Image (tube, rainbow, N blue to C red; front, side, top):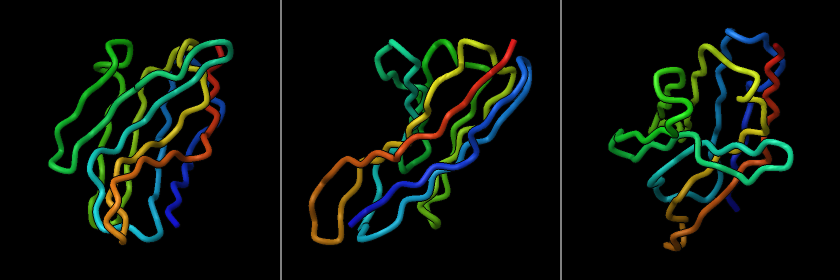
Amino acid sequence: QVQLMESGGGLVQAGGSLRLSCAASGSIFSINAMGWYRQAPGKQRELVADITSGGSTNYADSVKGRFTISRDNAKNMVYLQMYSLKPEDTAVYYCNADLITAWGRLEEYWGQGTQVTVSS
């Protein structure tokens, strides 16, 4: 069993900041890419940012320069530091991981999501 557990969401005013954390636990051999996605009401889930095990990052154009993704490979954790938040950043944020399980299978896992609400 593998679980991803997000934390750090909440309500913030426009221009504020939040830091999301995600911890992967369970029968994990290694983790390849980790990332953050978000889904606003009535919209499709979209990639916010992802990061490889080697530290290469990729960001959605809408968050470049405002959000920073990082990870701690030793702790199987990924973070999303969000600055200059805008009302349009309001969404449920999901953690994602592509990993190799202890029994050698390449699998994809999702967290349960954490709500981020930015008020204007």
